[in-house]
Length: 191
Image 1 (cartoon, rainbow, N blue to C red):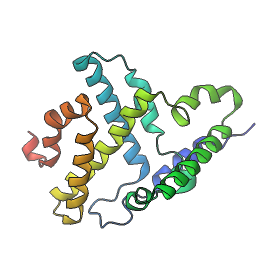
Image 2 (cartoon, rainbow, N blue to C red):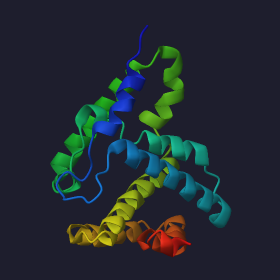
Image 3 (cartoon, rainbow, N blue to C red):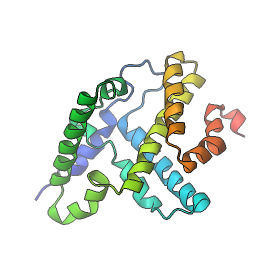
Image 4 (tube, rainbow, N blue to C red):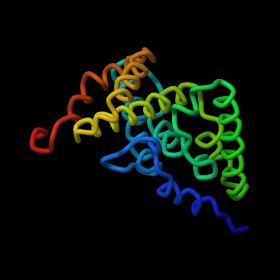
């Protein structure tokens, strides 16, 4: 059996994010997924080391790598559209689930069990961390755009920060307090 799974996954780089906004630095789904994986891993480590968690950082990272894989088939729906109407949000979730199952079915049968947890059925604790990492990645994008002088991201930054704080996750608070300020600094200031 030939499988197109990884050929599809490699196409994540062609799906642009933030389509409704002017960007100083374009971002694609593959770049975003890598950053979300790094952040999900970090949040899991922080949860374990600072807040007595027992989550698998590797599983968190893997789930984040694939968290937007369905967009290979569906495209990226802009957040204001996706979340503006409950019916649209519900329908889009259903479409994402169909796309995730389609991607999983592309794999040889003997590999599906290993990929199912990261494509279609993530543990609730992992899902929570991936969602937070996804939002944190969006916030970092907003901060970086603002740093580049792009006021287009001002409201998105404020809304995204508010959403992150509303999660009430101590590891997110720790990350914001410990690491976030660095993203607004220049390379020379990071020394």
